[in-house]
Image (cartoon, rainbow, N blue to C red; front, side, top):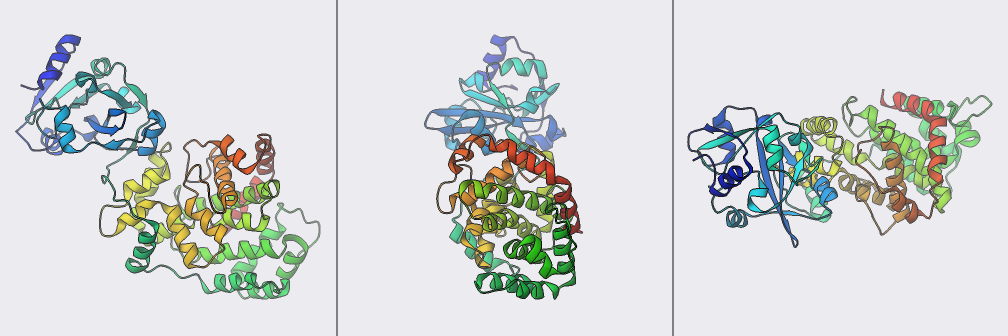
Length: 456
């Protein structure tokens, strides 16, 4: 028999047609898919989830994995996977491991990924270990009548569940398992100089001028239309004293020098070109937001500029996985970066520590590099929506800036944000969004040109 008893009764009652695809008896759904010789894109499967309110069946393609953030957004619930024992209690008429993706036959609430609902034909397990079932998309949609539809998945093969780690464990493992890049010598000297309250513009200029490339970048920055300085600028010291100011020069120089610690490809949505564009725009917006909520402009700029360094560290330590992450990012614009990082990392060999997200990794690196606490915190928790706690304003400024940049396709996140809540946390009126957008429009060509020069 191709179908479990309850499913057979359900199809007969609904008048739904199907075709049996016999295979040799196997021990798992994975083996059944291989034995069928069919493409994984044709196969539909079920993932069972539970919370205190009950069980939910998520129906999605075999070659995809559920995005926990997307599931929570659709259901408003924090659901956890069922155990094998719990599953067998619900599907007692099925062979173990062969759960039919027709929750309605078992009186379960069902959510279904939008890709599934667009399929012309589908193949799935009917609950037995010796056959699969083929059905037209129309009949399958009728079988799932009443299911909630939405974007639920990360497209591409998954690595399964990840073990949760504390940040202390992550920091310890990072230092023990990997050779973390030290802060480049020039960046360290700039950082130490900025910590000296008696440091002068001349000392900063002399330090920068030891590096011809950095000197050229600072001069290009000072001469850009971002500042509309009417006169000529002939030296770094003039750039500091006449145009940019000590803090801004120190911060951009620190960022440029620090990036040299990482070997990351230029191209792709997560490459160095995109990184610099994202960082400069985010820094500009944070600097614009800061005076409006009583924060320090220079520190806000630095938080925006350096908040995504964890992504560079991931790319530096794991180039192959970084390439995979880059591809997943392009294929799954609706998914959160945290979900994608959980998808790529955590498969063993110590890499599960990377599944905490590039934000946490960046915060750990910034702490090791002894950067200011707000910079550490902004990097470390910028992936956590609704953050409340230490250096909250700096964190939320970065989050708000990133939310505005998503609308322009800038950055590594494209899932929705709760902008009104961020404005409320910062004590800002909604009208500020229009002002910030206008500011961005004015300087966008110059930020783009500067980003291009920094990544080249």
